[in-house]
Image (cartoon, rainbow, N blue to C red; front, side, top):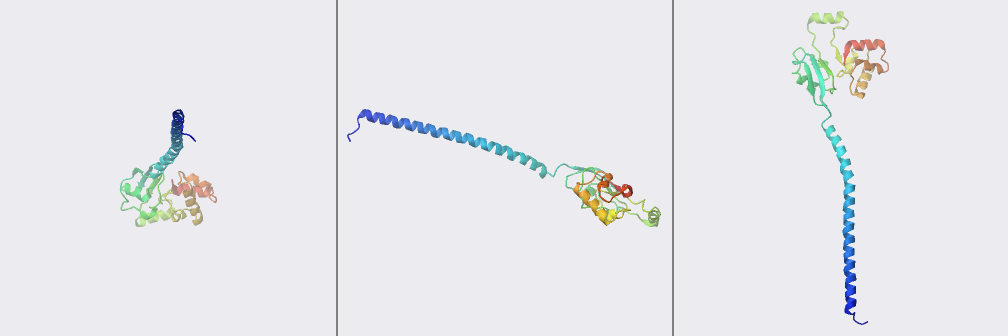
Length: 205
């Protein structure tokens, strides 16, 4: 085969240059499409990850604060705001702690607080006079029991409430995250009108 002429070399060179330019433009266009596609795919991921992040931030703070009323045998009875997840003991300490006449064993200090709850620190009954009054009035002078912090043993002291019903009340309270009214206990199987009257007389929200 003979050597190529000058005109043929120029033609081949022009074709080669054209192919290089077309190839470079195609590669650049492909890169731009890939970059754009990457941006679109990352954007929803970023948005979707941001939403759970916001909700997790609320959970990490433990939710909203709770406002409780601490009364009875404490140094500074009043309404207090405490962080969510606080216990009865935290509220008692916030109120200055129990007084010398407080019956600390009458409260479940480890119970978790609920918003709007009233915590009543019972007063220790001292002297024969107090005991006589308590026995003569068939327990009507006993301090009210806080439904939000009551234990099975405390509920068992209420007339018409045995250990089984007391346990049902505890389970009902835990399932509903606390109770705002004693009347809610009417939903529990086995609690009739007479029992509800006894509960209203001895319990407070």
